[in-house]
Each structure stands twice: as C-alpha cells, then as structure tokens.
Length: 307
Image (cartoon, rainbow, N blue to C red; front, side, top):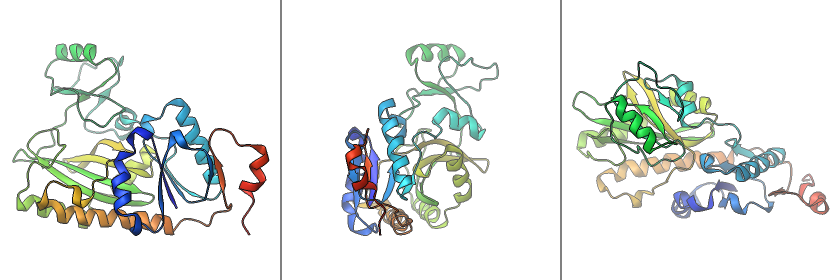
C-alpha cells in the first residue's frame, strides 16, 4: 500500500495519474488528504507531499503520523518538520542568483534585472523582469510577502531557454522532461522542432544530472518531489522543488509530438514507485493508528506486533 498524503484542495495533482496506473505500481495506492488522517491504517509506504501548504495544525498532524509510521516499520518519504523552502534552498545551494525575503536589505551589488515571486506556491513569477532599484521598491510595496529574485540568463547562443524537471522517489532520481522556449519563463513547451524532441529523449535516457540532483534533494531534506532547474555554465541552477507536482499522463499531453517522451517518462516514474513499494521493510505492526489523539482502549488492538 502506498499512501499519498496531500492537502484536500490539491489532491487533483495526482488523482488522474494514480487512477490511470493503479495496476502498475506494485500495490494499491490511496490518496489521503491530511484533513482526513484519522483511524487505523495498514502499514505501507507513506509519501508526505504538499509540505509548503501545510497549516501549523496540519504540519503537527503530519509529523505525528510520520512518527507512528516509522515506529510501525513503514517506509516514509519526506519529513514535514525538516525541509528547506525556496528561499532557504537558494541560499544553501550558493547558486548563480540570489533571492531576498520581505524585509531583507537589498545589497549594493544587487544584480539587475530581477522579478518577484511567491515563496509558497508554484505558479511562477508575479512580475516580468524589472530593471531598476526604484522598480524593486515599487514591487515590494505591491507584493509585500513575495521574494525578490535576481534574474539569471540561462539561454543558449540561439536564445533558447531550457527548463529541466526530475523527480526524486526515495533513493531514485527520475528525469521527467525538458521544455524549450524563447521566453525566460518556461511553463509550456513552445519549441517542438525534431532536434529538441530528440534532445528531450536523450535527457530521459541518460539522466545526465543525477548526481547533482541527488545532492540538491539531500540539501533540501526531501526524498519525494520534483525539481525544476536549468543549467548555466555547466552548473545546475535550481528554481524550485515542488513536493506535490502535477502528474500529467501521456494521454493528457496536448502535444502529440512529445508523446514518446511522456510515455518513457511515465514508465520511469512508475518503475521507481513500484520498486519503492516492493523494497519496503517488513512492517513491525499490523496496524497503525493515525490522527490527532489515540484512544487508549484501542492501543493494544492496533499496535500488537505481528506474528
């Protein structure tokens, strides 16, 4: 059994995927909203997702559930109490750009241009590129809770931007896709030339940044999620790690030319999820009680060691 814990409003990100591939993942999958975590669960693999959307109450519930799952001998991905958010990850990785939280003084060597973006969502920049310090001050007034991020130009000699994405599934790094665009914000595949389609397939087959990505996930304290990144002067530059990424099935892509890449990517991800379920340690308990509170009268029934 694989439990995918997620906020109730954002379970749509994986519902279609797990429905489509339910018979190919080495065991049953249950999407479990944090808001409904209560009662007795059979042991399994627990994936804690959507970490940056957890309220204090849900974060406490998730941490308690994780501890009970570990005590029962279950495999657990992610620690809701130990992970780096976007800004902290940028600082820890010492990348080719900097981000600044509200209230942080702007240094004299602030590199222009820059843009604004929220720290706790995955919708992309809030602004276009802003070229002056006066624009910085206006943007901070307009978006008082947002990060200010220096722009790093990762375009190649032809002006093409590449956004790579890859998953971590336990110990495995699984390449997801490369998107090509002439705009600095790469949210959708704009360029579908045969050369770019071939490059994306090579990326999926070769997994060229595996070692660097594993170090990045380790730094972030995450064993499940999708990292979005580019490469600048041969160095991986991490934009974000999403712990509840949208999983688009191969049939769901609007770009038929990319369907071979989507199909290969789906197979790689499902193989990793299957191995995760099959490789988990033997559980030490038949059941674990989850939720806020644990009735003492039920404790012997739910935590009795298995024979």
